[in-house]
Length: 202
Image (cartoon, rainbow, N blue to C red; front, side):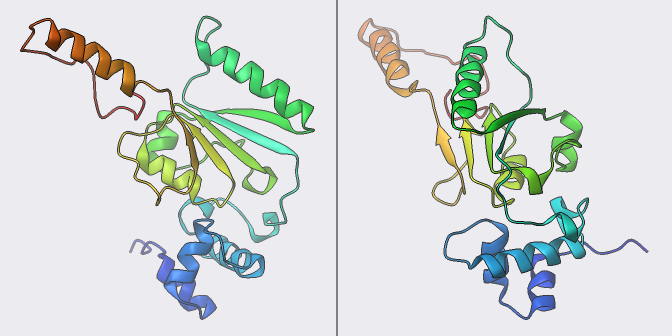
């Protein structure tokens, strides 16, 4: 018989704390003491809860590794603006005394809600996500409790529940101006080609 999925309630019951406290600890919410957060994460690892299933309790330690992880589906080529963005970030991160490691998120990782094999949660101080548009996978990343910034994100991300910072291109104003110009020019039937649920910037 297949083992039932471990829930946040299971973790809370094992520690004798409320489900709300356990959830906040796993989601990196402010106001939770570090001691409580560490206990919750260790118990999540012990019970093999979701993204912690592949870890062991000895891997949980205070973060001070000097490592920043960049997660993306595809590294941009040299003609893409993202290549200059990554180059600039790497220079700045290095200047601040940190190291930047890059991790490609494969389709299979997103489907199984698994972190990349070479991604060590206990050895990362911060996460930068570029063009990751799977909302469930984004929630997996934010649940790690590591400071995270998304450069663009899924269109259905809701604030302030989403526990990360988000950097977006300002496309709304230009889209408005373009549409207004067409309407002012007498056009009455307008279309959009693409997936408007793809990402927030579009």
